[in-house]
Amino acid sequence: MSEQPATDEAPPATGPASAATHRPQRWTRRAPWLAGGTALVVVVTDQLTKLWAERTLTLGERTPVLGDALGIQLIYNSGAALSIGSESTWILTIVTAIGVVAGLWYSWRVRSRAWALALGLILGGAITHLGDRLLRKPSFGHGHVVDFIAYFDWFIGNVADIAIVVGAGMFLLLTARGTTMRPEDDPGR
Image 1 (cartoon, rainbow, N blue to C red):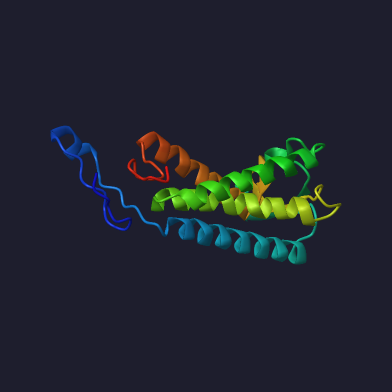
Image 2 (cartoon, rainbow, N blue to C red):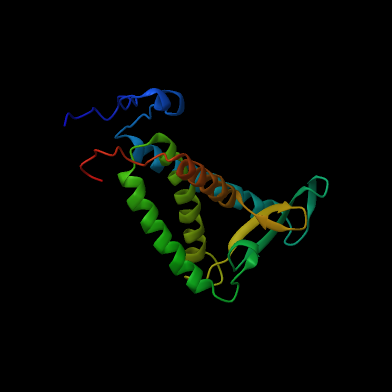
């Protein structure tokens, strides 16, 4: 079997059906760096916006941005999405830590640019939430996440939540399309 350089396009599929349905996928050994860079941008952006929110906003007071659809409102969330599990913050911390480790492992192995971007978004959101759980008040491992983006009266989130949702959407789309993280013939698979 011949080796294909990691930065070249995958060989095109053969046959009449595959010509119309298959687009070549580009592989790169730099994909882990794309995932890491994306995660870093998410962490920095999330933490800077949380710093802004804590210094600027009044706890619990909602300021409309787009009427009732979008507003800013500072809260401290001890739970997960929609404040689920607010009495189990330490469990959420452990689950998030496991998610970060898994995200790091997959991000290191990825060779697809699209997958690298998806993993980087999810990993960045998980890292910044883990940091909040570990380092914010009230105590180590029980920290509350700073949320400040209010969507209707449904929930209040932050930049990390947006990154996680977009990354998860990409994950589902890439999975549905059959896009793999690595070439099928990659020995590191």
